[in-house]
Amino acid sequence: MKNILVLFTLLATVVSVNAQEKQFECTPEWVQKIEKIAPSKAEIQPAKLQKVLIFDRFTGFDHWVIPHTTQVIKVLGEKTGAYQVRITKDVFCLEKNNLKNYDAVVLNSTCSIGPRRNLILDCLDIDTSMGEEEKKTKAAELEANLIEYVKNGGGLVVTHGAIVMQNNSMPFSEMVGGSFDYHPPQQEVTLELAEPDHPLTKAFNGKSFVHIDEPYLFNKAYEKKNFRPLLYMDTDKLKGKRKPIEENIRYVAWIKKHGKGRVFYVSPSHNAQSFEQESLLKFYLDGIQYAIGDLKCDDSPMDSKTNL
Image (cartoon, rainbow, N blue to C red; front, top):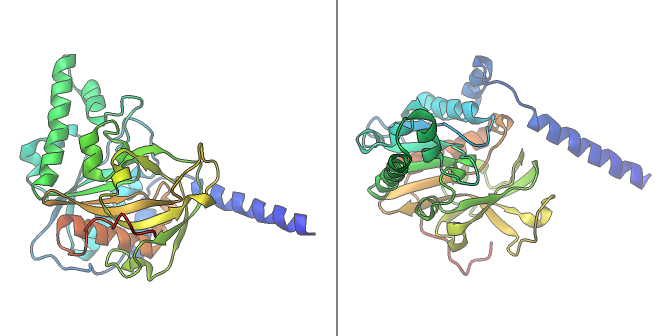
């Protein structure tokens, strides 16, 4: 009898994961569903009209949630009046003269092709007739433009696979707070609150968040943990790890200063179904308002001696 119960439990888990992995188009009906459950009011009402640029081009893995995430971010701004958005796939949006028009930039799962892992150069290969050296020079310039924009006070929001955008670039890794290492297979993941009373985890009302996702693991600048952690997972509970993980507590969302600017990295979610929870929508909205500079909160790096 006990073995039968275990079997049914495993089957139920598989069915649940498969249901959450099911892809669907970003239809007007789905967007309307999000509009209904999205917060009606922002935590902070801006003193002026804030402008956010969403760059959602990919050259590597096609995260099916990209159009959904773009629409979620747009809806959050429109419904609350917290900001207005412009959406683009043009890599030349990273020119200095364009970036200066925005209070924050959103990199929406801008995943690059491996092993080079340089989305900007990927785009130039596709879109221009430049020579090889000219492409490399221009790609370095556009990446430097984005980093300088943030250092000078701009906001940056990095969603899910966008951390892979310039994955072999240490300056990009330092700005974002880490680089992509790998992820075990999609599975049910429990995300805990690093600081339940922090303004940016307020959306979860002190409770953990359970959903189906790719549990991202990070390297490079992540090892310094030069950020304020928001959400974490216990990797001892993960299935399909490629190698032992020394630190079982791994962060999947954080905020950080970079120069005068503010960065919000949020790994959840690979699946649009996760956005059908008001708590995650509120979390995104608050994180974007932090990046813009409207929502003030403690973004000092975590104490390296702290063991969450």
